[in-house]
Length: 390
Image 1 (tube, rainbow, N blue to C red):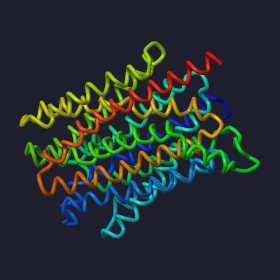
Image 2 (image 1 turned 60 degrees about the horizontal axis):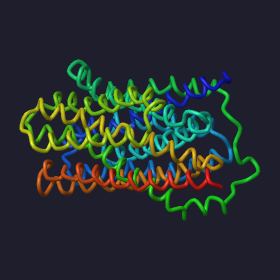
Image 3 (image 1 turned 180 degrees about the vertical axis):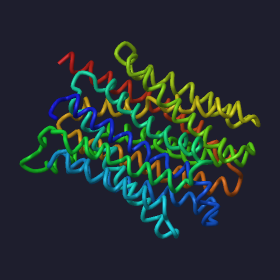
Image 4 (image 1 turned 90 degrees about the vertical axis):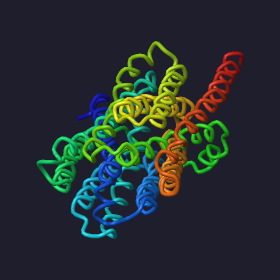
């Protein structure tokens, strides 16, 4: 298959698998804590391990796809994810579990960086909209894991369900294998000097800082929400999974809606609106003892984080088109540093002060995102004005 639609469909199926990667650990965390008898700090270190693997892959994948193209890297990513899921399903020890987490993390990093850069490359006129739609498929994968575990967990063992998900990863693998991808953008060699300039670009660093906060929030909320509501609101483990699925559902539905709105509403304005919803949701979650109100707050948090990644990556794709893979790798690597640190800190603080105290990090980070978005928007408008004058 060789068409823009087939390439975009391959990217969407790949991003669906990344949604599974980022959700799986949080969804099974209560069971892991019980099975292996670990505390919150040790559980938080599992998020650190997974995100470190995603970070390592993200740094490598951008220059590699710029130099060699997308297909081989995406195929490798899906294989690693499938193997990692089987490892999580049947891990007999913490060592095996950690190896499996490294597998899904490294495979997920390849898929995340590769698919985002690929969609930016094939969408010259609709980067924000198409990156937003790509994020919908992340949401489908992310919603699917806790939903399946919550609805089928009483009929089948978690290990059986996770193993089945691993087998289903063969579908995106086969689709990617059958698709013809664009030629490499730097077939004669990688321009190290140009990449060095990217690292020193203050606007790129600002975008990376925004994604640092967003990724940290996304993994913190996705990873610790089921534990939060289980401990703070005394809901059952099954109900906690249902509430967690509302977070990913809110993100997915917001992205579906915003995919059309991006063509009529400025991406920065849409992002301001979503963050405001997320702030309100975080305050609901922190100040309620009701599981129903908490569920609403979690759903609103999903809406709150829906636009940050596609908006910032859309800005990035426009500004660094010739080295999009490398530029995406750099900011995604910065994002994943937040994804490593914030869930880990949340686990440590939660062990000392409870999950409600540790979740104060959520509204604080959302407020910082608003400030950074204002600075970035003014800088980009200034550049556009300068180009128009010249």
